[in-house]
Length: 63
Image 1 (cartoon, rainbow, N blue to C red):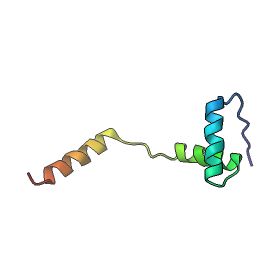
Image 2: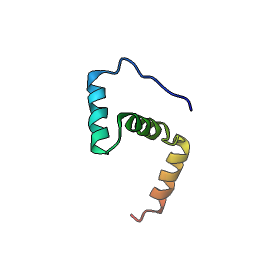
Image 3: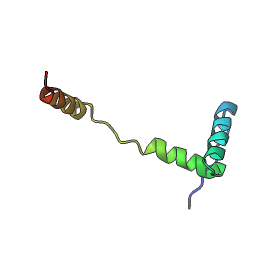
Image 4: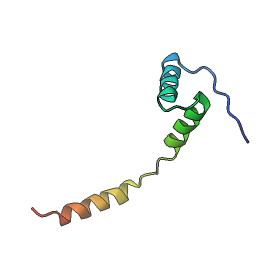
């Protein structure tokens, strides 16, 4: 399995990660993986499709 070594983490970011890991009962590595997965799994948004959907909803809304 691949591994990743992260260097030069700003102190404030490291502290946030440590606090988050403790709060979620995870070790630091598992918390870092969770945060990476969460950040990278955000669906890409198609702005045109979103605008079309919003316009459609607005058109159906009673005035």
